[in-house]
Every structure is written in structure tokens, then in C-alpha cells.
Length: 139
Image 1: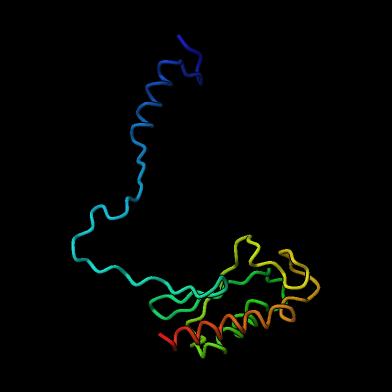
Image 2: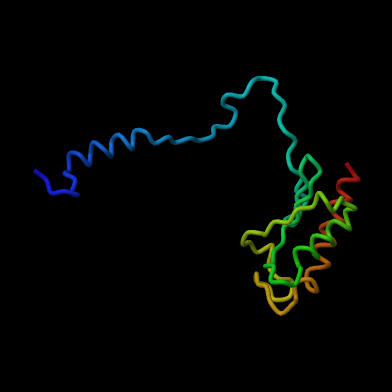
């Protein structure tokens, strides 16, 4: 007989088998289960690392600096929206991943500090918006 509160090996294995057998694992297989002739959703337009335009015309601005009270998520997104003449209500902000393309234009590494974000990034974000607008107008 076992002590109260202890579980013998056999009961542990039985319980583990039942619990493990009820575990459901799902995964996605591209193309599987799709009916023929189904329309593919139009892809998101990504003209550069700082900007994405979805099929519903929403604009996502990728910000490469932390928001620390200086308003960079607003100011940089407004620069892009202004250059694109985008509806501000459709503009969203997302923070970037770690990648060399997002390095600070002055210091060459990803960092936030010294109130340098807007003064160092305004031209890069302005050009990202202007380039996206030119590409959209050309298509």
C-alpha cells in the first residue's frame, strides 16, 4: 500500500498516457483543404522595412525605437502618413524586430536615448512614405 499523497509508477504512467493521448497538436499545410478556384487574398504591399499596406488600405508603420514618452510612435507615423497622404485613422504602429536595417542612423546600432529619435529618423521615415506613395501611384 502506498502512502497518502504519493503516486506509484504504474498509476503515474496510466495518467500520463491518458493526458498525453488527449493532447491535440495542430499544424498548417499550405494548400491542403483549399477548394479549387478559391480566390487568394491579395498580399500585403511591403515597399520597405518601415511600412506595410494591407489590402484593406490600412498602413502599418514599423518603428525602430522605443516609446519612452517622447512621442516617437506618433511623430514618425505622422511623417509617413503625411508623405503618403494616408488616412490617419487607418495608420497603425508596430515595433520592429532586431535587424541591422533598423539601426540608428547616427550611432549605427539599435538604441533609444538622448531624444535623438525624431531628429535622426525623420528623413528616413519621410522617404519611406514618399517612396511607397510613388510606387502606389506608378501601379
